[in-house]
Amino acid sequence: MLKYAISRLLWLIPTLLCVILFLFSLIHFAPGDPVDVICGPRASEETKALVRDIFHLDKPLIVQAGYFFQNLLKGSLGVSIIDREPVIKKFMRALPNTMVLGFFAMFWTFILALVLGALSGIHQNTWIDYVITGCSFGMISVPAFVSALILLLIFSIKLPVFPMTGVGEKGNVLDQLRHLILPATAISFGWFGFMCRTVKAMMLEVLAKDYVKMERSFGVPSRYIWGKYALRNAVLPVVTQIGFAIGEFLGGAVFVEMIFGRPGIGRLLANSISTLDYPVLQGTVFMTTIMFVLANLLADLSHGFLDPRVRHG
Amino acid sequence: MRNVAQQGHKEFQKDMNGEFNEYLQAFRKSTKLFIGTILVVTLFIVVICAPVMAPHDPYKMDVKNRLSNISRTHLLGTDHLGRDTLSQIIYGSRTSIFIGVIGTSLAFIIALSLGTLAGYARGIIENLILLYFDAVRSFPAIILILVVISAIGSSVTNIIIVFGFIYSSLLGRTIRAITISVCKEPFIEAAITLGSKKRTILFRHLFPNVIGPSLIVTGMYVPIMIMSEAGLSFLGLGVPPPTPSWGTSIRYGFENIMRAPWLILPPSIALALTMLGFNLFAEGLRDVLNPEKRGELIIS
Image (cartoon, rainbow over all chains, first blue to last red; front, side, top):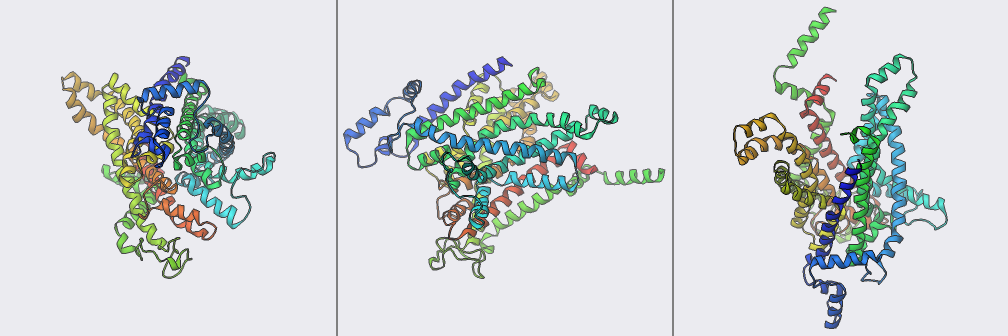
């Protein structure tokens, strides 16, 4: 187990190196001289030389990556071209908004998926099962930004129940919750579909097992069986799915944050792309990638941790 | 009681004549596959008959009637430049299907070559290919796509190429797993023992057995690509206007959401139904082709 974890972490280093090299080569993909992209067309020769020196654009990619890591060790991710603010400051300001959204959505989805998935498994082939399975399948198919828009339309514009944009006032938790509900629901639709089906599948698998039959024949009440055996076994694959879902969430967050006007990482990224603010882009993508990789790694390891059968091969 | 059992057995035998019958049975019983096929076939009819079905030219702007509501001439209203929404949706399906199918084909070709190579030729080649797969997979897909498209510019060709390379990484890993499991089959071992050359084993024995399961997994990527293209277009980085696309239609609807809130509904519904159709079709097909699930379907 420990060996597996260490080998995965070691595998991380060449992967991250490729990621960094790729990010630095991006600026060279754009048509034209990268210095012109940064400075704009009307810069003087001195400015261009200065920019070339600051961003080390004439040096090989490996050297640029080296400078990046050097800065990283000093705790800096670079400075935005547009407004000279340190990238790390922008990132740290945007991060809590996205994390709150992610955790809220995840928590909400987890509970709902467990309950509804269990119901669907227990009452298999009844109308409850059909409705829940149908809904979960439909939800998988609807992309996050589409459901976000439809929710916005129904619950913010047509019936002014929830606020349209923003994060809510700083100290007011209730207000912040109100602003969280619609985006979190939009994100959770997709996750809910997958998790619900997984829970139902696990429930069915466990309920068909011999030891469950034995317990029933002893007269153990059904609810005890559902709670103690079925749900416990069902939680395991769902937890791993949550890990992977967090990774995907970072991608979907871009859309949801744009639609609901939340100043999170997704919007930071989208803005830096549209303004071609390369340091912010590189810094944000780097941090996002690290979070994504760590989330996937945790999900993998938790699977091994929670299910002893995986550990022992 | 004996009669009932005999009758049941006779019927069972009658139904089970021939393997094709078995597939047909499962096909008829599978609601998933049925609904999925209807949706996908409808989509393809719309794509092929677009010029005939669309009431207006999707590029024609009628700025006087912009953002108009449902009317007899414009069945779904007009967008912010006066273009008919229904025609935009119909022609937008062409863009989506084109990018979805061609992008998936490209991803399949790349993933098949690299995945089979990685699964068959272990060692340093496998590690290099895995490094490529993992490096690409370590980004959340949408973010990587956004970043690359923003750098190289967005056009239909660029989008297809980027999708092909990025989605080939996950698909390639799956194909590698399939290849490894096929390699363990006895007939491969027999071929090696009999002295077949590596190339023969690869092309004559491995490929035909790997392609089958791979195609089914690949089918799942068509809706993913359609969704990604719509997402890109929604952010403004997708198919360049004026080419009609569901993503750009949604974007225009979102920009005008206060003045014409109904505009986001038609492209959203079209996108959702398309993805639903492909997902149902792919899953239904996977169930029918899997012997265990097929049996369950027939018995149920």
